[in-house]
Length: 68
Picture 1 (spheres, rainbow, N blue to C red):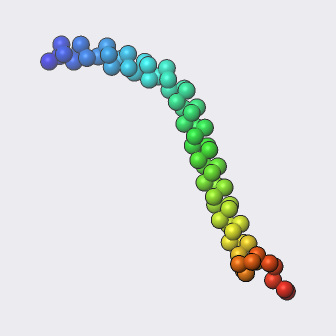
Picture 2: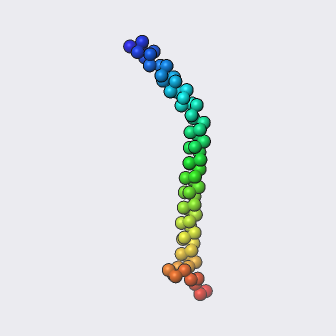
Picture 3: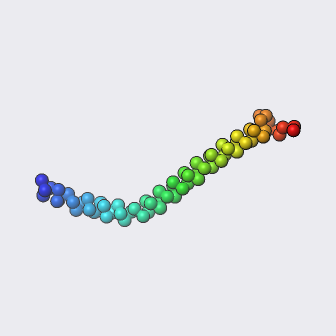
C-alpha cells in the first residue's frame, strides 16, 4: 500500500509543479475577468440608478420634462 502511494507521488508532484507554473497566468486572467465583471456590474447599477433618476425627472413615457 505504501509502495503504491509512493509510486503515485511523482505524477502528483509533476501536476503540482505544472499547476504552479500556470498559476501566475491563471491569476492574471482571473483578475482581468473578475475586474471586467465587477466593472460591468457597477455599470449595470449606475445604469439602473440613472434610469430611476430619469423616471423621477421625466415621469412621462415620452421623456419630456415636467412643466414646473
